[in-house]
Amino acid sequence: MRRKNPELMEKIRDFVGEYYRHNYESPTIRVIAKAMGISTSTAHGYLVEMDEKGMLSYRNGILDDLPKIKKTPTDFISAPLVGSINCGNPETEEEQVEMYIGLPEALFGKGEYYLLKATGDSMEDAGIEEGDLIVIRSQKTAAVGDVVVALDDMNQNTLKKFGGFNEDHQAILEYMNENKYPGKTIIVNELVVQGVAKKVLKDL
Image (cartoon, rainbow, N blue to C red; front, top):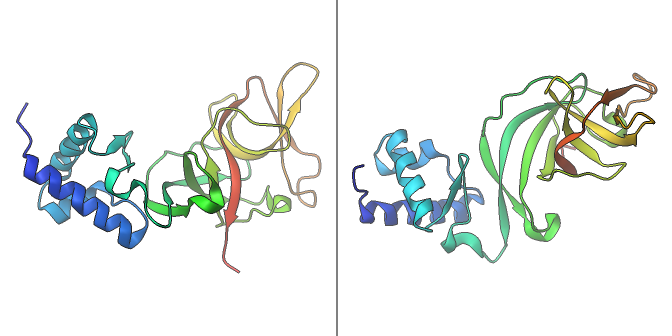
């Protein structure tokens, strides 16, 4: 393995810190590569080694927890926007980070978050409409009544209200649009929660 340049590591760390302070989000690997004049694969290699050295956190393609920006005066959380979530019938969505968005910790609390863009109309009674950005807290458990990102029995994802379990111990995922989908539910044999919706960001 070719040895990484310590000076370039410091430059990358400084660049990420400055970028975060100005944009309240972490730069993508492409932005880092362009700023440093290196390829994306080289930038990836540097981020992996910097993670191993404890200079920053780079896990599963997500860059965060840089010591220089971890405690900013505004205490922002860097949350990735990872595509869309269907609010109608379940469908498969390939998770792909589009950008990172700074969320104020004072409003959202500590934890790991990501954002999804809503598509479909099945959650309108919960205040979630087409095009809204949904702030999701990453967790594997949910309480009855939570709006969850869940997988169905075909391993497809959807956004629905968790309605508890039926007499056969199957999970009930409820539509929230009584005008269009009165009483409609999805029944899954095993509830697999990928996160719980906490807030909705929308245009007025």
